[in-house]
Amino acid sequence: MIFDLTGKVALVTGTSRGLGQYFARALASAGADLILTSRDKATLEPFEAEIRALGRRTVSVSLDVTNEASIKSAVAEAEEAFGKIDILVNNAGMNIRKPALDVTWDDWNRILDTNLRGSFFVAQAVAKGMIERGYGRIINIGSVTAVAGYAGLGPYGASRGGIRQLTMSLADDWGKDGVTVNCLAPGWFKTAQNKIMYENQEWVEYLCDRIPLKRPGRPDDLDGPVVFLASEESRYVTGQTLLVDGGISGGATRALPSPKA
Image (cartoon, rainbow, N blue to C red; front, top):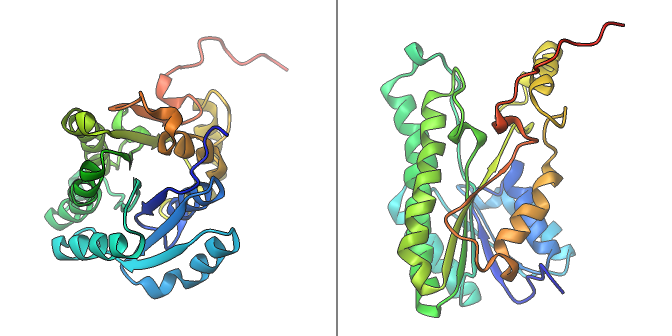
């Protein structure tokens, strides 16, 4: 079977809600056992039960990606539970939407410490075991904001642009050790972070007009891409950013006027 993750162990950061749960669910459906993480692991109990109902082994660990000691402890606990980590999905992230002139020093640090520094040090901690075993799949979750500028998303876009570059550097660092590193970059998806924007119908229509496929992303649009990057079928793919964005990153502008009724 292609895209079969049976026997693999995946750690997904930020699985208390949102896309992190969709990534974990997709990997479990493909056969992987799961390590779920959150700053408060008690919040993971319902999702843990859901993963077990799929027939997968799972364990939850506490992880704060902004804390070095927490990262080291979580990875050690995960490896003790399963003996290995084959797949890492670096999903934990956050955003603060503000005009650039309103961004504070603390806003910048919170976003970059979580999204960029956290992703690097989680990857570093997990990669040590992967390198020893000569096998690993690291998937950094990026964003279409890594390749396009959006007002109000300066620090967030900077963090995701950093993820894209970091992916290329780590791929070059660890490729010789059997570890691939890729970036999965969603476009405009409705999540807990941005759901208020999707309540504005005028904005949704404006957004869809800019997307060649004429709709925002659905979480299940990411199932195939994340499983592919986690699987043996992606063995010769590394250092790449896979944009799953309905084509909006192409930057196309309607070149013809709308037809008259």
